[in-house]
Image: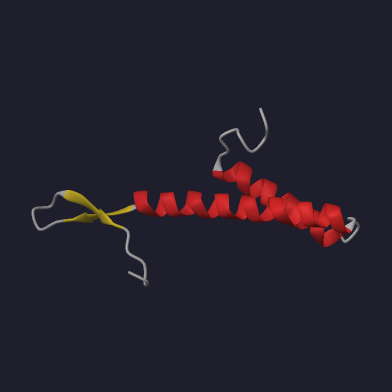
Length: 80
């Protein structure tokens, strides 16, 4: 099974993105290696972004209503 076919966690995807950035920052890669590493970094960046979007959808702010009961409300950002 290829690495990209396996389900990654957010932490794994972020770690892979960080490794790609570190490799590119070193400046010792050939052009072909740098392009391949950049493509991998873009893929991991997108995967991290998808994880964060899913997490944002699941986040709820717990508030007490007027009856003293707790309820959840959708997370709202400044963009909403």
